[in-house]
Amino acid sequence: MSRSRVVVVGAGFAGFRAARTLSRTLRDEAEVVLLNPTDYFLYLPLLPQVAVGILEPRRVTVSLHDTLPRVRMVLGEARGVDLDERRVHYTDPEGTRGELAYDRLVLAVGSVNKLLPIPGVAEHAHGFRGIPEALYLRDHITRQVEMAATGTSAEVNTARRTFVVVGAGYTGTEVAAQGQLFTDDLARKQQAVGPRERPRWVLLDIADRVLPELDRRLSSTADRVLRRRGVDVRTKTSVKEATSDGVLLDDGEFIETRTVVWCVGVRPDPLVSEVGLAVERGLLLVDSKLTVPGHPEVFACGDAAAVPDLTRPGQYTPMTAQHAWRQGRVAGLNVAASLGHGEQRNYEHHDLGFAVDLGGLQAAANPLGRPLSGPLAGVMTHAYHLAAMPGNRVRVAADWMLDAVLPRQAVQLGLLSSWSVPLDTASPELARVPGTPDKEE
Ligand SMILES: Cc1cc2nc3c(=O)[nH]c(=O)nc-3n(C[C@H](O)[C@H](O)[C@H](O)COP(=O)(O)OP(=O)(O)OC[C@H]3O[C@@H](n4cnc5c(N)ncnc54)[C@H](O)[C@@H]3O)c2cc1C
Image (cartoon, rainbow, N blue to C red; front, side):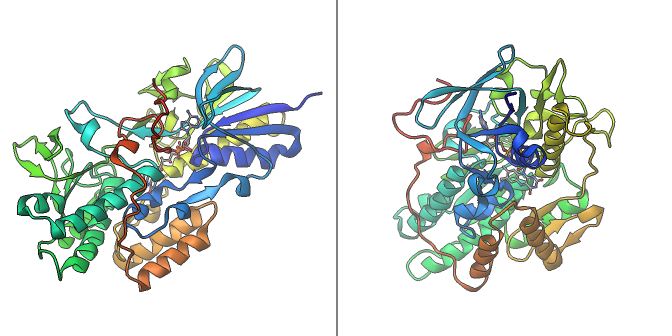
């Protein structure tokens, strides 16, 4: 009898955990295939630390080959799913098309940058979903501070030293808080030759507080740290237009800048709308066992899925790593159960709290609902990330230690241009390369 084949699409928090659970549960009784554009799992919560030069990019990646030895890795991006023929169509990194037949399918393709219909944003802003964008930002920010030190126009120098972050969710808040420390450090190194003007970070959000989706106590801690550090926090403020010279705010003010970091949130990966399955708010609708209604052989989890939240009836689970990671495990167990190993179970998880790293030794956290701030929260946040990473912990801890005792390296490698990391992309994990058509084309 031939072995069943389970195809998992996406190796993020949900897909990685699903594949790992399946390979441990089914061992050699089924073939587990993992389709992903990169050969690594990306630990997204530490991406802001790559952009500000604390961590080298490889630190936040975990090799799929090393951690999932019994899983067959296929490098590529799914383009569509033939639900009747039970096949996934994909394109490999060299543009060759292929297909994978499946007996069970797990869709865990995550999310991409959310765009809003604001003129100029797609052209002039940069998102924050993958290593290429984080690397680009690190270089770009370094370059702006360096050029501002020697530029001949005071006006342009000020624009170069102004950084605008749109969206004060956890990503935008972390980027602004850590960015201010990073550029202060860069500017200090230029003091002997350049102007003494301090770099300015502006953090905007349409909501009335930073971290609008989190506990109010986290918001007030983050707000206090940001303002004390000198970040210009503007709530109830949005962008009306972005240009190559700056951003026009909805209150009429124009802020001259060369840097707009777009952190307004995420939308499901475009594959979701292409598979022809039921969606809820653009996400793949699943039941509490993470099965797609009408397709008991298809499961979905993580940011791409609308998963009923059994702890808050009538609502769906939030798009967080905490949920995606645990949903991946339940999806893996339920796929195994559908192949005769164990019983299917419901997905139910009570939020354990959140941790927002504000740089230095500062953080805002509420483990198990208890609000923490200051160095204690900072230590807890670092410990949490180390515990949550499925690998590479020693290297991450080593980078943190080096950063604590050595000055940060102020160099730009210039490997990526602005064109390589468009905001409007279905593949933020890959840099755009000349000669390769966009996936959408
Ligand atoms: C900068 C940042 C910081 C964050 N910080 C936190 C935090 O501190 N705490 C927290 O709880 N959450 C945090 N989040 C949110 C959290 O990272 C997501 O909720 C989580 O990654 C969702 O997991 P996922 O598996 O659904 O998607 P992802 O982790 O995004 O993984 C999706 C995977 O699918 C792959 N993929 C996409 N399209 C295709 C395709 N067509 N074919 C094949 N593979 C595909 C991608 O390459 C990726 O490997 C953060 C997010 C960002 C962007």
